Image (cartoon, helix red, strand yellow):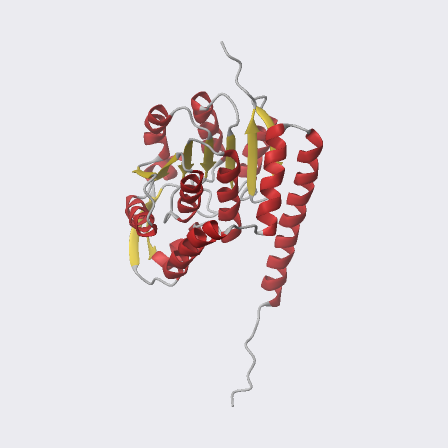
Amino acid sequence: MNNKRKKINYDSVWTKKLESLRDSMLAKIAIFRLILSGDRDSIILANTLKSTLRNDLIPEEKVWIDKIEQLRKKLNASTTEISLVDYGAGKSDEHRTQQDMYTGKTVTTTVGEVCRSGSKSPFWSFLLFNLVREFKPAVCIELGTCLGISTSYQAVALSLNKAGKIVTIEGAKTLAKCAEQNIEAIGLENVRVVAGRFQDVLDEVLNESRPVDFAFIDGHHDEKATMKYFDQIIPFLANQGVVLVFDDISWSPGMKKAWKKIKADERVKISVDLRKVGICLMKKKIEE
C-alpha cells in the first residue's frame, strides 16, 4: 500500500481561497450599494450578483451549462498543438509595444493550455450568463472569443431569453475557427464569430450590429486599447439599459488606470469593481 501523501502547495491553495473570499466580499458590498441607490437597473444588477453568488439555476439553465462545462473539461484535457497569432498584451510583465501588438506574436501551444489560461472560469462565465438573462439585451458584442466558452454562456442566456444575438471577435484565426466548431457542437445558432484584429474589424461589426445593449471587452489587456474600444463602442450603444463588462481590470497598472478613467467617465451611470471584472451601467442617452 502506498502511504505517500500527495504534496499540496498550500500557499497557492490559500491564496486562491483568500482571493475567492475577497471577490465574494466585493460583490456583497456592491449589492448593498446598488440596492441603496434605488435605481431600477442598479437593483437588477444587485439581483444578478446575488444569483451568481448563490449559484441559482433552474433545471433548463443547468442542462445547457452542464453541456458547456463538459466541453470545457474536454478542451482543458486536450494536448492538440496549435499555432496562433496573439495580438494582445501578452503577460502582465511583458511590456509589449503598440507595434508589437499590432503585428502580433506567433505562439505554438496546446488547446488545453489556451482553454485553461484564456477562458473565463465557471464563476465569471456564470456572471456573464446572469447579466444577459436579467438585462435581456437584443445585441451582445464580445471582444475576445478564445475557444468560445464565455461566448457560449452568453449565447445560451440569449437563447433562453428567446431573443437576441451575439457577435464575438477573435484576433487569432486559429482560435476563431476552433470557437465556431465548439459553439456548433453545443448547438447554438445565435452566434456570429468574426476573425480579425479588433482595430481592423470592430467599426464594421458595430455598424452592422447597432444598437448594442451589452458588450464584454476582453482579449486585449492594454490601457490605450481598452480606452479606445470604450470610446469606439459608445456611439453605437442603445438608448438605455446598456451594460458594459470589462475583463481583468486589475491585470496590470495600465489596466487599473484604464478602469479608473472608465468608471469616472460622465457617460457611466454606475460602476461595480469586482477586482477581476468591472461592470458599467450606462446613462440614458439624451435624445437630440
